[in-house]
Length: 267
Image (cartoon, rainbow, N blue to C red; front, side):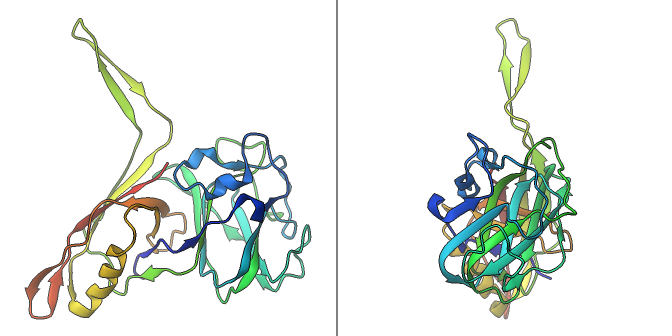
């Protein structure tokens, strides 16, 4: 399968997000702040229930959500529900159920728990996120449930021809070197979070397959997008920025070669 990209997501107002509980200083609306990951939402409980949601989201009208990305969570199981109306604390009768509990795995490159969850035939006003009975707290904070961000995708672009070999990725921590007057120096860590960056190589393809690359190039470069490797590991999904424009070079009749585009995660 080809990589999946999208910047077609819903931004939900604070008044339309409902949390089962909330810790002071970690507001539920923080799940919609895509620029500052660690502002995050924190509940005031560690309740495990497949039907009593951690978060309920009112999208105000029915939406055909094709996927949900959960970014930097501290639970290892999750379930998604959908319904035309709010079912409050009991979603056992919801019209849409994502099925078996979804396993949230550790992305070892960035040392955070992420998940990309495709949804089939979701077209509802309300969406609920639950931490089922099988869920365990994971990561460095285990006292209450946490969610960095929630991305509700209206549509995605799945590349019919995947990226070429040469895919480079790294996850670095920010630091600053200080040069002292006596000639020595010190290094200061500027944070504990690892930031994913990648160079995506778009190699040879026929002209008709280039259309989807122009579609991505038309994404607003000033707003975050989702990059999902779509290669079997649902944790390899990133909320990031695209740094470069697409550039295609005609190599031969009906053959075009793309360039290298850098993506970098927002933390």
